[in-house]
Structure formats: structure tokens, C-alpha cells
Length: 134
Figure 1 (cartoon, rainbow, N blue to C red):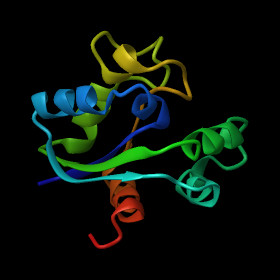
Figure 2: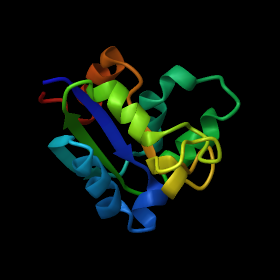
Figure 3: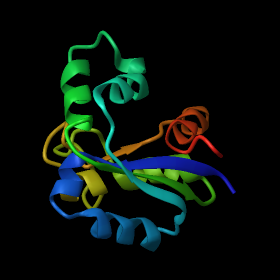
Figure 4: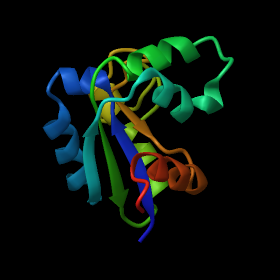
């Protein structure tokens, strides 16, 4: 079964939205394979988002992602990556389709409540980052 990674970001964790987001994932047919609460330090956040290093938003993103705990989870279902990306919605909650997780819960481009892997290859790397025993 194809797998992908979803992170519930600090803004959603702080607003007690973990359960609401998980309900949407399960209602959409995703199986939670693994789940853990983790608090990234600055170096870990930099390593996870290294693909964005040098971009204007990098430092702000790293500071945000290391500001408080996040929930990391491995999700499985057919078409896991593309279906999750559709359920999550556009990065900017103001541009996200109605009913998507980011449209419903996101605050702005940085505090958009969730991160979802953008390809099967990226998912494999990101899953290993948070779940090294897989």
C-alpha cells in the first residue's frame, strides 16, 4: 500500500486541532500506520526543510516549525501522495479549495496547519526522517 507523510504543524497543535485533522484523514480513507508527537529543534527543522534553504521564507519556516511540538504520521492508501495533497489543499489557505484542511484550519502561508509530502520519492525520505526504523 502506498504511504505518505503528514505533519500537523505547531499552529494546529497549539489550537487543539489534532483530533479534527485525524478525523478528516480517516474519513477520507487514510490508514494511520505510525504517529508520534515530536518537538523539532532548530537544526532538525533546518535539515528537514533543507530543500528551501536560501529562500526568503526559510528562516521564518524553521523558527515556526521548531517553536512547539508537531505530530508526524505515516498514512497509507491507494494514491496516498496525490489524494493527501488534494485533501490538504493549496499552501496558502486563502487559495485552498473549499473544505480542504488548509482552507478550514490554516491561518496563513506559514501557519497552514499541515505539511504533506509532494511526491512518492519525497515521502520516502520524509518518512525516514521522522521514523528512521522504517
